[in-house]
Length: 118
Image 1: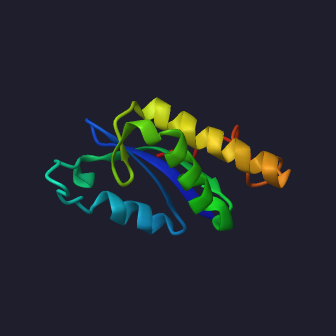
Image 2: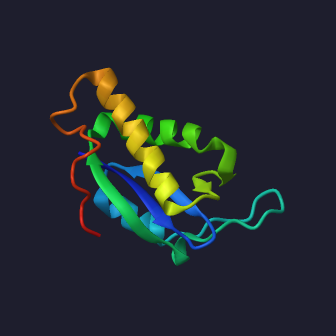
């Protein structure tokens, strides 16, 4: 089991994946550093607005595909200059694509599955 998630930092959103639920919490407590002279949003200001269980072996693939979908709005690494809803939609689309590929939408790979309460 793993999680895909979106954290809203106010001026940007973080799109990520974690195999350990505690890792999600730790990521939120870590601050991104300035790189290439650009200010980078801080995770310590972010809150998780979306979290969903997915198959552990596919979490990083789903995250990577969501990053591809959002590539035009990338700020830095996992940060994107878009609304939280746009990021959530990208994760759901990536998850749906993975489900179609695996032909296993009825188990742990259902994009319509209820979101875990935050």
